[in-house]
Image (cartoon, rainbow, N blue to C red; front, side):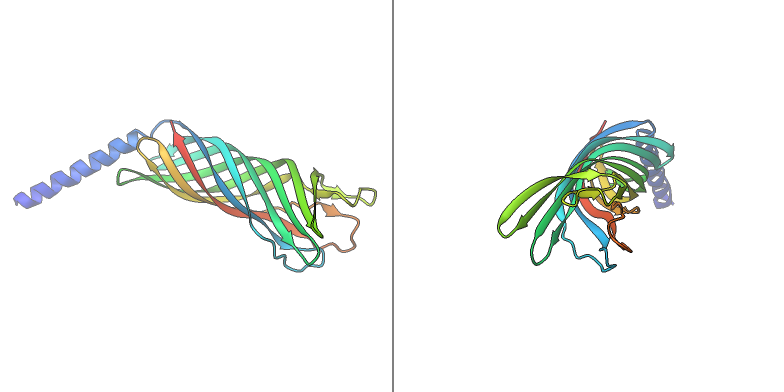
Length: 224
């Protein structure tokens, strides 16, 4: 009988501790974060063949808000500066594309007490807009760097020695992480592009090019 009462008391105290921890998360919090990106372009070339591009390393830095919706569930909008791109290698030339984006992630987060902190799992859409870009090419031992121009279509009158991309990007985020009670958090991120970032190319007949940003990364941040 004593053991039974002791078990009830322990369960009650555990429940109180969990509720108390959740109450500390019942208001809007501001977070700063940054980290490393490993990005690529997936898709097909002008002939419809699958591309075999290589990952490049980039970074992201920004902020977000964590808005309570219900116990353990949050809406987490943010604003990030993020670098993406790819490395393309063929027999005659190596090219590295590095594109800088402003991104608006709109994530929904499940956050629950685990140990001395909180486990986090999140997902949601993102919108991105390219603000600058460059391509560095190496051919026959010679390096050349050119700016990327953002436009929705390539016309026959456009210069052929310039790389073009659409400025708009959109897709989905998925992440998981852990936040300490002092506000320090860590998370693993995955990003899947949903829209083509290559312009409509009117200089190529039956162009089958389809390029989408994809990647993963790691973030460290602090929530106030």
